[in-house]
Image 1: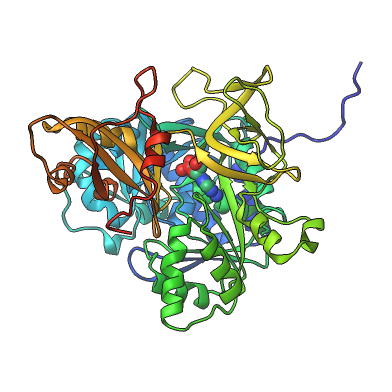
Image 2: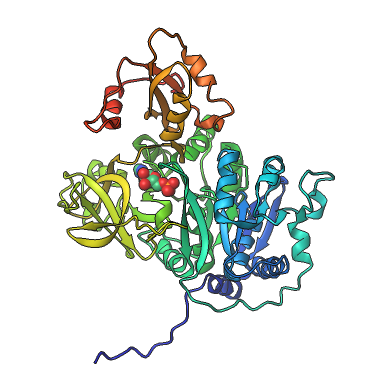
Length: 548
Ligand code: AMP
């Protein structure tokens, strides 16, 4: 019979991260540039107290374990308090991407059955508009102080977050429960059909927080000052609010102030050492710094992911500003970290250009994630840096199912079940460095945000002059990808590019409207009648967008 270990066992709960931070990094600061415009200074002790008050306040509003609390909010201390106050007390924090079209937000909040909706002042007009459609939401909470509450609003019984907390004493013991309990939900939109919810657990979140902080991952220490530019509504800001408590580092939260000048001032003012974000945000910051002949005095490392990091951007950060760029790949369904590009000892003796080529790849997996590349029949392909296949993953923080969907998304590798298909196409070299070469999922990623080609095609197809429409991703220097509409017109009708583009107005968020239209006589199809997107993309690969 197996001999069992004789070690203590305690559930890996998110509340334990906060308790640790309160005790061991109580004075370490959390600085927030708030929507109100001020620079708010707090610390882990205060945030821990306010998180307990938030837990009490949500209970007073009638929330029961498992209930979802939605947020429409920027990165700020109140959002951190809601993260911990909900998850810690057994509720589920549901971060909603406010950049989505209002109809999508309504659908997502309804699907998650959010009972409470907490939101920043920026989103007051949006919530006023959609409140009557949010059938499951019983309480609307504005994340601000009494002084900033609106004198009048269309939202019935609008509550004030700071008031709710002030009414509680914070004398609250975090409950113990199963570590596999849901802690938060993040919807990922863009792929076919409605957005899908990734439901993280306490266990997956704590394990991810451990792994994310490791030296070969994000390398976070208590001496760091970390500014996540990546929003807390994008896969929990890549887990940084959790690693922050685990490690006890200073957290700097930029709120809605994401332009180059605001970010630069915050980086310098708060002595930020490390940051994380999608490539697009660095363009704004770099342009500002370049235009004004500035340098960074403390900023040393950054993780760039969510979309491929352009080599020129990586070089500029490294060579002009001495910033180490850690290229990373992951996805909502993976909490999100999968791979990071950090060189091994042997690779450090390679010529500079060979090192650079490796750093430009998406990198090696961290312990906790396992990956493979497979052909269309599920057979694994060699790690030779040349064979390209469908990238699949498994691990402690990879989803096994989507929210409210019992169908398994998982596939088999060489007959072994249990792998999540990422929809990315990649090579892996002998050292385990993965490089994304393509995408099999039919979506466009613009500035780190998904755009569904299917949605854009359906709108175009509703135009009376359109016979067939296909939307593909076209390269863009700022946004990485932008949608390009390819149209076959009906015979004997005239329609212009402008008419088609204006047809999108009011039907989809402005930033999702295609950048250009190409009229063709035929769109390539497979034998089964499906549009051959890869072929179409290849045919139009030299198309220059007017916005580029
Ligand atoms: P999301 O779920 O929104 O985080 O998007 C995940 C997807 O973004 C991945 O499946 C990739 O298609 C893409 N992605 C993320 N990081 C990278 C990267 N470093 N390089 C290329 N594509 C990436």
